[in-house]
Length: 183
Image (cartoon, rainbow, N blue to C red; front, top):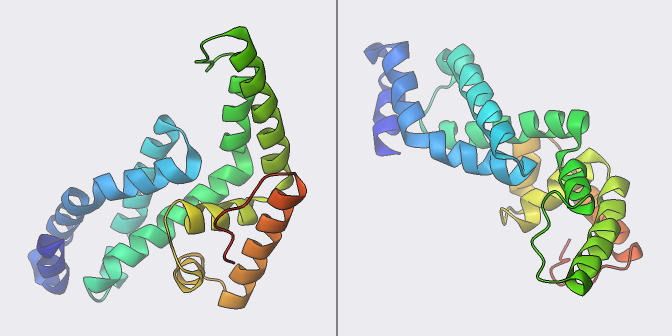
């Protein structure tokens, strides 16, 4: 991150050099975020590419190096949210489990239990609108605070709180036990 910090502050180095430094410093982190948000390696690779294309387009508008990490996270989250709206990747992944494509059980009883649990999870996630799904992922998987989520998605903290509460309510209503529901 230090290399990216110095290069962004010294824009006289050149746009390509700044971009290269940012790519080297952050590409793995952006990929991990995209993978967590989408659940698919190929899609995470595509989103990582798209995030850095956006960076290349906007690099002259970032004033301080300290903005880069938050900007990359925000762009990754927003691109992933858009993609989830289009593809509902988690629903598709659970669908593959239900059809046996990803089955890793040790026996027929375990397989049946896994399929039933997957069906229930599938119903729960189908019921979650993309925004609720995204904020819940950011809160639970990334450990982000409501303020961080709000900043990343360009929403108010109150709205994020409302989305998280709605998501947890739907998860509970579907019969799932919620251990970390601190909305």
